[in-house]
Length: 394
Ligand code: RFL
Ligand code: PHB
Image (cartoon, rainbow, N blue to C red; front, side, top):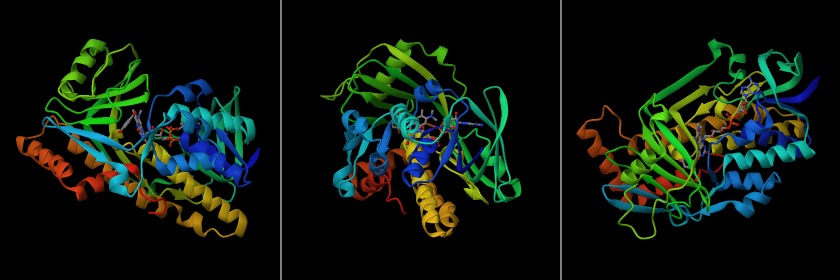
């Protein structure tokens, strides 16, 4: 079998890329190791930047997002008994974000691909990508009990942090920059209305807490916990009590943590990582396959979308003009945005979490930075611009 663009992975980056290529008249095949229902149920991101929303709409995947997505014009930061609203439109010249779960983005894109797009094979596990330096790279995979090979003009690894495509780039050509953090997140999904209309990010001496949502009746909540935490050590009541203590909402009108049945509970490690370059020969990397951010800045899914928007434009330009200029610039173009998001995610994470080894001096620095954001429109605007997302060509 042969295709123009072989896409590995049917997460948001692989699915959006396949859709954008389809719209540009470029054929592709998507290979995904998991089954459809697993991919559609994986609980992950919840926040979409305006540019991601615009891209999904232009891709024809905006109908349910427009009906069910929740536009958000700000977030609340809480520290030292004080609440600060970051007003996105006022600070950024009109930008906002949307609450629309990654599970829903994936469902919408899978449905479109199956109805109108090229082949999308589930339970097709790629074992190796070869020939990045040749003009016919090959993808080896297992599907329906058989070993198969897909030859391609180009291969795009959208296969996430644990994917295999990265290994098609020789080690001598590849550099990974990485940082792990001395804490994880315990995340729950609960059948309970959100604590407040907007997301609440709370710094407290007990550790970080985040109150997010999935819909007007479903809450998504996170607690900073030590690395290696077993979710079994956190019965529901303990989670709610700790959220109450860290969010400290009781004195604020309009904000109330409402308890409800917990339908999902898991622990996620925090990591920052960038692999450079994001291209070798005819093999490209996009999304989590190339970079990971800790979730505190809500950037991962948006970075994945930005990569494939840039890449789809470059493929379309190549198909139309024969020029490889945009394909050649792909890695540099994306890495500028990626490093900005890495910095922002790192700064949000280290300002809001309590490092177990942190000194009282470090705590004072965090409080000073949060005070600065609370009192300086410049500092607040810096946060708002990064949170709502930079223009695509930055
Ligand atoms: P994905 O979603 O990991 O998809 C990769 C796909 O590749 C498949 N795969 C393979 N297929 C075939 N053969 C192989 N050998 C394969 N190996 C892997 C996998 O099964 C999978 O389907 O990567 P993608 O598409 O780049 O998308 C990235 C996003 O999923 C990720 O960045 C975000 O979820 C990060 N993230 C958030 N991002 C945001 O923008 N806003 C948020 O609010 C936000 N919150 C989060 C998050 C990530 C979280 N976790 C679990 C890490 C909250 C959490 C808790
Ligand atoms: C989420 O709703 O899952 C979410 C929201 C904001 C973040 C991270 C995760 O920063």
